Image (cartoon, rainbow, N blue to C red; front, side):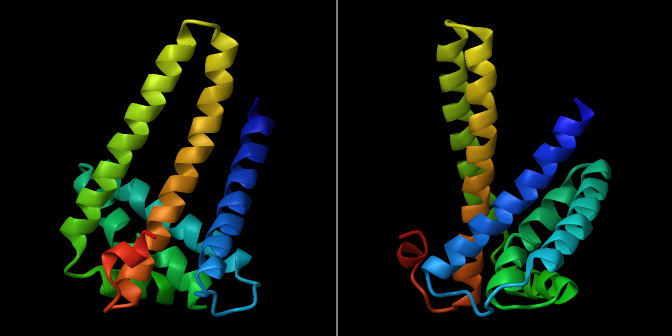
Length: 169
């Protein structure tokens, strides 16, 4: 079981990186030709440790860091910034947009939770194995939704004059 979790975590990081790269490339926002995987891994480790520590400190600091660093992957992969530079750029770019980002993330989160709950509830009537398979799929899909959300935030705060409808198009 422990090896399965390690493989799953590795596949999650690799898959998310490839997905982020694809999102940015599709919109012509990929400034570098590649080679940003290891900095992405480093940034993921640093930001995850900081957010978990913040969540342990009464939850609010962790949520604050999640909002402030929501665009960091875009700056790292899309703009080719370094690990600390992308976290700093995201922090600065999201300044003044915190409540809007937070509320949008809450709406996305509630939508993902409701959809997952409905699907799992319907499948609970059939079999436990079906629930487990769909639950794993929904977990991966929700990761993709939040990766896309991070890139949307990056596009919004990185391209100051761009209309919100164009960001989510």
